[in-house]
Length: 338
Image (tube, rainbow, N blue to C red; front, side, top):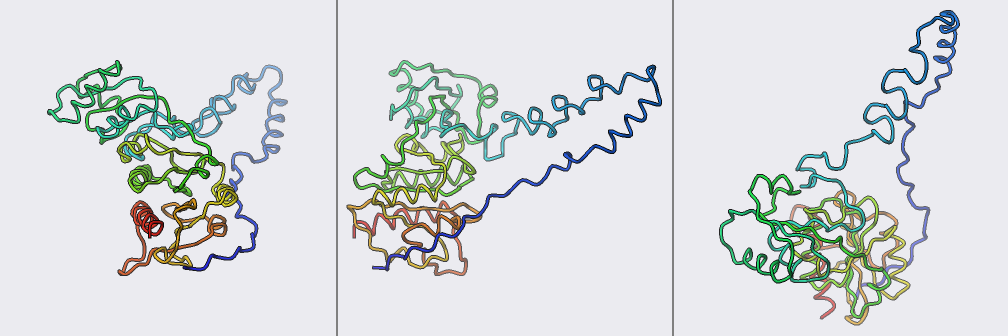
């Protein structure tokens, strides 16, 4: 059995990136003095354009051009084109999951019956298929609002490019509590430390459900949640995986350790081989995966019980995070049942 890593001294955590000073927030004292001198020279009969109410658009905080003030800054969430993560809208509040597209994802939504479904929409001229019949029959049996519509109208309401002609609107996914996930009998948790691509997230959730993961932990910020693209790629796994949102992954790791869960961080430079760990089946295990670009954060890597690697035999030295997650999940299953 690979030795358990000793506790490293907890150095100061990295500071988050601090926003730079806005160049627009420069001192305007010189310009203000020149303006006052000019108004004094013009006298009482001077032009009225110098007052704050009649200034040109962009001068005040409410009338500023896009990007200037908080009300006008940035693009509106629904104005993005398809292609940004496969969706038209921004990151959902909470876990998300209220808009589900794809045949398998919609059928699992209906079969699971874990949350209220508002309506099911389907393109009217689709080729016959058994899964479409299942969705239609389930919708009728559940007395749901079921609508057939032409392709153009359907695609105007779809939020992904791979909808397969079926979508549903439902209540957002409920959030689980971290303690409940950690204390579950035989807990096997997947902890995602900043995954930002919805396609990767969906693929990892699908793999996790198939591997018997009992709960998923994700950060509230700087990470993707259950967008329509993630729900589509998960192929219904989101209906069967309890998920918790936490304020910070390092703090969540510490809490899971307090509750008796063994934490394993996956990192290419890890001290131990994932294939050599001995993991008892009667103790909770949490597999911690890092983000696509940076991997595990430094603080998360310091706090896990084991920092493990997947042995690489080829010339390439890295795996896509979804592929690495698939290998790691099933290896944990194998090690726990060995």
